[in-house]
Image (cartoon, rainbow, N blue to C red):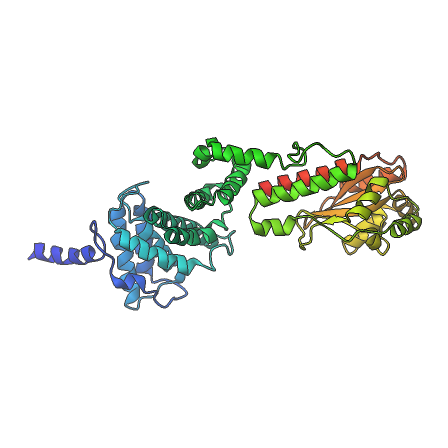
Length: 446
């Protein structure tokens, strides 16, 4: 009689997925009403299962199912514990630590739980990522989305529709990758893209990951491949410093600048996805007339340097058309400069919407002397806290100074120098080449 009792108590465990190959009961796949706090018994079962899942998945799995059965019968469970339970069911589907072989769970249940959990995490993953709960949502989203996408990829063969389904699963997950330990999700995305014949998109991702984490071994085979090396050589040729593939370098400085901007845009198109290209692609404002440039020189008391004058009249002022406060380069047209502050201290004050500390550091007379030393003709908004100002001086050379609002010490030193011995700048071509190089580096490291 005692043996019969023991057998009867074990039978539900088999039905609950405790034995190899056992299917999960249907109540697992029906989210219950959520409470503010879980029943202590449910919380205890989930906690114990979490402790066992990694090394003893066959022992951990029935504990989760028991907790979910209790919830299906009206015992209280909070949403976090329910989502965590589904995550544990995914983890303990496998036969042991780091195993890819199904053991306590079945492939069918793995897929069903994955689809359910993925849907429940959408909209939650990526929110409040600096809290433990937010990190769990994100980690679960990465693990489940990646696992499901990889299974779809393996099952797809060469079927383009099935591969497209795998890609649709992994791409929103990959878009949230924020730490190197989750780069495995990007690896899955790359493998799917390559199998679909979309190598250009795949190589962009590989290039961006390796720029940040060169030791990421998952891409070792791709990095060594002839196809990727060819792609990388083409990309390198598109940097401002690279050798032009369009023939010899132009003799005119302005033509070289235009060519450098064109190569920058081609680099963006090759190295990044279209949405990124749209944000940072450089275009030209309408060209200025000679009369407008003459009026600007008269108004500022400083003639517009020849190279800038030719650039503005021949091509127009380069700028990024999209509105962004991150790595946004903008040169102003002469027509715009006629109606805005061009002196350095005045331009700093204007672009920030007021910098009262300037009045603490410099007298009005000193600020006027500073502003007469040069003309601010462009900016690069590096981030929310930093703006870099591009200016030319009375000698026709070009300079740059960054104003970091949390610690403007460097900017103050530069402004002070303008009162005595103004620093000497370089050419417009060199200044813009530096800007493009730094934008490329920042985009690659993002």
